[in-house]
Amino acid sequence: MTTEQAEPLWTALEGLPRPTLKELFTDTSRLANYATDLDLPGGPIRFDWSKTHLSAEVEAQLAAIAAAMDFAGRRHALIDGEKINNTEGRAAEHTAERGIGKDSSVEQAAEFHARMQMLVDAIHEGALGDVKSLIHIGIGGSALGPALAIDALTRNGAKVAVHVVSNIDGCALEAAMKACDPATTMIALASKTFTTTETITNAFSALDWLREGGVSDPYGRVIALTAAPDKAVEWGVDETRILPFSETVGGRYSLWSSIGFPVAIALGWQGFAEFLDGAAAIDRHFIDAEIGENVVVRAAFADLYYAQVRGCQTRAVFAYDERLALLPSYLQQLEMESNGKRVHADGTPLHRASAPVTWGGVGTDAQHAVFQLLHQGTHLIPVDFLAVKAQGHDLDPAHHEILLSNCFAQGAALMAGKSSEDGARAYPGDRPSATILCDELNPATLGALIAFHEHRTFVSAAMLGINPFDQFGVELGKAIAKQIESGGGEGFDPSTEALLQAAGIGG
Ligand code: F6P
Image 1 (cartoon, rainbow, N blue to C red):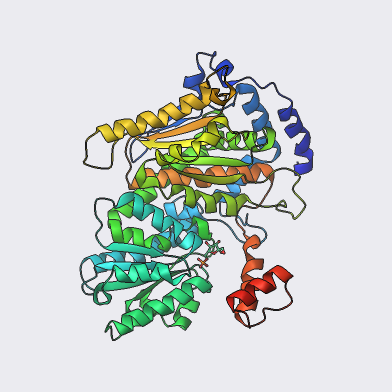
Image 2: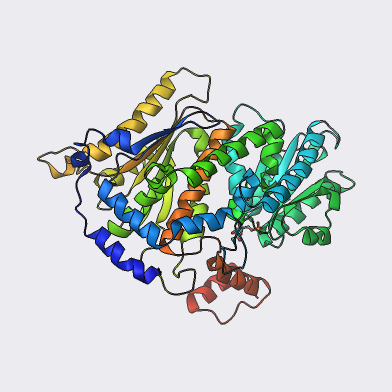
């Protein structure tokens, strides 16, 4: 069946009755049906989608669309390493990094991991001298994952202090340099393509800093994490210091590959292995669980329902845990770069909404900044709350009790609302939210959370018939920037011309 043939099924979905959340909760089995506890390697995680407008009818219709779009076949193709990234003619094999996929790809990933483990262990054992810090340079998928994992998992200390630098703005690299001593710092250059301007520019400046800091062989301090080892060699990195990964691992799906090197350096290999295990457990659930019991599919169903039927243009994610503060920005790349597309995989135009805008922040901070709009604004915004039962600090447990109380209070308030004679003081309610509650935040839990979101993104793409694994939309701006840098900054619109002139760039 084609996307066009699936259209009447979407129309039928739009026509289904729309009971309120309160009405849906008159079904006494609702909580049992829509809140699932998964027993995972890092401890249990609850996925509570009961405060969304999903119903048996809505799910059945979405399941019909999934069947029409051959979702099960797409999932097989993903896991079996078929070339599902059709526009670039390659597979998308991030699960192979977690031991799940085509045998040859799993073996290849294990070989690359073994090489990475040797280097990680050697650094920890002091074989490369006294290494106190690592400056990890990369951008997009080569930085957001490492930054998230390190921030989430090393609040109580790391084996080696890692500073993730992405922005071309020298302020970013300078801040990392100020925090490090060139004599005891290594540099990780993370770039799938090894051509990204920001990363290469920052890398040259980092080499200068090492040199000026008295390091006689700055290149000897560099480790390249890349799917283009030839380019890294050409650039000057010693072959023994290159940690390759497969071309079939997409940039924003690459944290599990050697792009995760800084995570392994910070946590130790065991921690990194647990991170992979947590993700693999979600892979297995995603592959094996029936549609009605599959937490990944359910989350994607809700996403699609709100974007396609209720016209929601954004979805918000609030981590009620400071350690997960970087999760929203990680998810922004994952979801928006994957599913922000205007054509189907075959190039024909998409006539439905593609990915909503993902945004969010950290609770309770966000309550005092943006929640006004969630409760009383005119937009309907489905919200995900993420929280962890075990606190991540040694202070009075009152902090954590207040944090969690606020998290649950927000979900309850959004749903219940409150009437008032005074319009300004009335809350319409019936606003949806989902809650993910983890027992503990540890490497395996984080791995599970990230894999859950990867597959959730994939399900939406499969049901819309789009290719989530390319990102041609980022190329035009890059090409124009290059044109300006090389002095070809003419022939633009008057506004751009004037800006270039005012800033004195572009020749
Ligand atoms: O410009 C977008 C992008 O290609 C992302 O998809 C990718 O994660 C990022 O740039 C960095 O690319 P690389 O790892 O090749 O440096």
